[in-house]
Picture 1 (cartoon, rainbow, N blue to C red):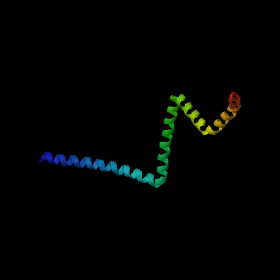
Picture 2 (picture 1 turned 90 degrees about the horizontal axis):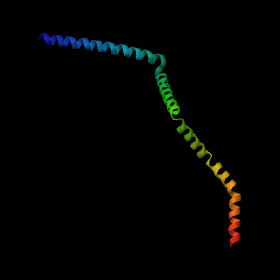
Picture 3 (picture 1 turned 120 degrees about the vertical axis):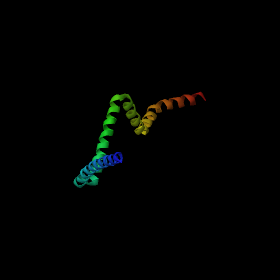
Picture 4 (picture 1 turned 180 degrees about the vertical axis):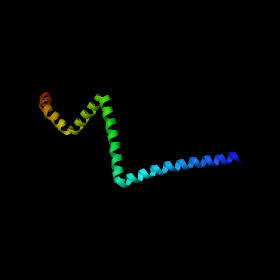
Length: 107
């Protein structure tokens, strides 16, 4: 019975230590909630995650500048595609007219 009693006392001590740690953490969390509120905590956590994602994006951009440049160029080409196509049509219009003239002369 001595072993069992020692085990019970050991388990109670572990339980009490865990309860003390929990109560300490809970008190700190409660004080933080009263100070900042839920919205403040959410905003802070969101900003922390956003900063982490930005830092990661900067690290990727620094390690692969060619990919970033190519992506930006592709986006610009896509955004200005109608303007580029119309410029191309205007630039090729005299050539197309010449080809039409040559085609009509052969008939």
